[in-house]
Length: 326
Ligand SMILES: O=C(O)CCC(=O)C(=O)O
Image 1 (tube, helix red, strand yellow):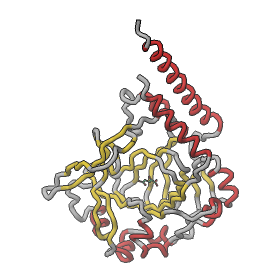
Image 2 (cartoon, protein in one colour):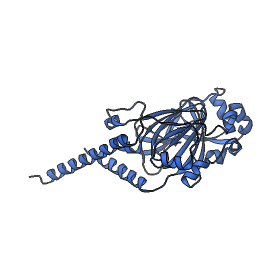
Image 3 (tube, rainbow, N blue to C red):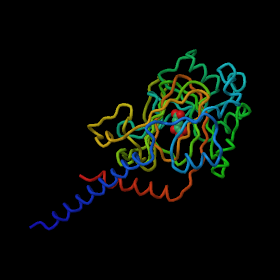
Image 4 (cartoon, protein in one colour):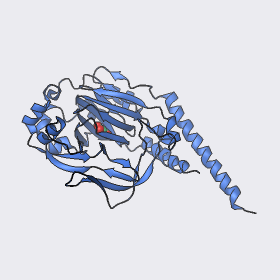
């Protein structure tokens, strides 16, 4: 008689039970507090109201008229950027397909990073120069607005006062984004409270709450980086280091045969237009596309590592364990 089999069967049914509980928890979050679409605020909030209504309940919203006083909204066209910072070197992510930091086959592939004059990037975006099969995206998230483009900071605020007061801290990073329509940010989450401000063009966000984690597949991938050869061909070069956990599903065209659980997510889709600010709460999954040449600036505030973070970690780990149930 095989004594292991009954034990295995009960382990499997315990896993399935845990999975059902996780899925019930995700559904309950939708019933209890998650919105069906992203609401708009018509004016910047007070710190208390913003903390109470949005940060604490971890709910996204779009804030209008919070940037009306930024010169950037009126000034930042390509001519102005050329005059003000055209000769400045910026870090640019270059890929053959628009996917920087994304799963490609069995690899997690990062972009080739080039240092280029901003004017050169603008020429490429305007089609004045041959892109040689590359897709270009200024997207380095190292506070690149402050680090690489200080000339532009007088056209906006580098600190959102009501947010700093609500959280009791200043942003960890202020990032500048400028890219082609083909540039896509694959689905991921960050441990930041994010204020994402569109200066020109449009950004399209697909959002999933952290509680949907049981339905979101993760894999472990060999890290690699794109490299464009002299003849223009892109290679994928393996990198040393640990495997990278990443989400392999494309939420705009999910392969539900491979990832049937993803069929249970309820995405929020929102277009953020010039002059609008999206509050993207910490740990929300997001996938981002854009109109050609869209410009944005975002503020990342480190999240509180409190009980909410702790609960998320539990859901994350249980989702992993129960997903591997045969
Ligand atoms: O604008 C993008 O392409 C990505 C933005 C993003 O992922 C973020 O702000 O965390």
